[in-house]
Length: 234
Image 1 (cartoon, helix red, strand yellow):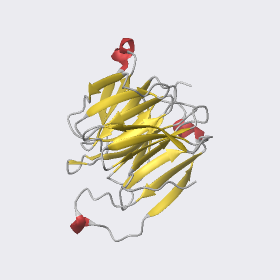
Image 2 (image 1 turned 90 degrees about the vertical axis):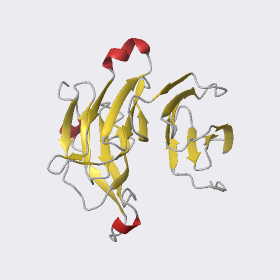
Image 3 (image 1 turned 180 degrees about the horizontal axis):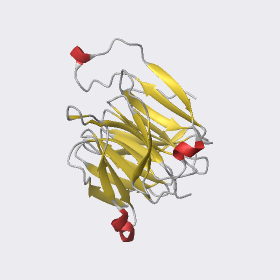
Image 4 (image 1 turned 45 degrees about the vertical axis):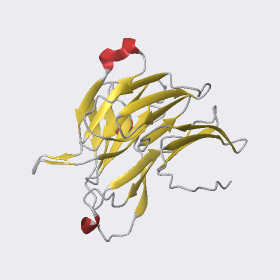
């Protein structure tokens, strides 16, 4: 179906089939939740400086440019069920909910990822780590995208440095790193069955127009090797 859009929508998230919802956020500081089966807008929510990213399943995780994080339940969108400030000091670039909906991961422009659980009793499991950094020259790159493997609960980060890595949050370790590409990776995700990993290679404008790489933008499909994404403890 077709939706008339009056502002750019740089972030869009589709929920699993049980909720049949799609969440979109626009540059006019507004996000909308749509029912994909009825093709109607379920709810619209306006908030100052909503300019970062959303992810949706049973819960909607909305990160704003002022570093506030808002958690909504799609069954009652009148107000967020939880709001708190990001533990990361710099602007959030991306967010992804755990497959089991018990928490989320956020990535910042400072090459850091934070793992956050929704239940305060699980707070001892929260942690942050550094990634997408060049130790040879101390360069720090933004984490542009995070996505979770639906079966194993492991996740991938992709960054401005042109690399992507698989991680195990339970073991707090990197499972697999991949060679650096000549351009930034701006988006990524696993398919529903988890056997294909897709990523987009393009310039993310982190260094301005003068540093724009003239190479063509491209989308790549990477076959997922189970031993690369399966937790080592399994």
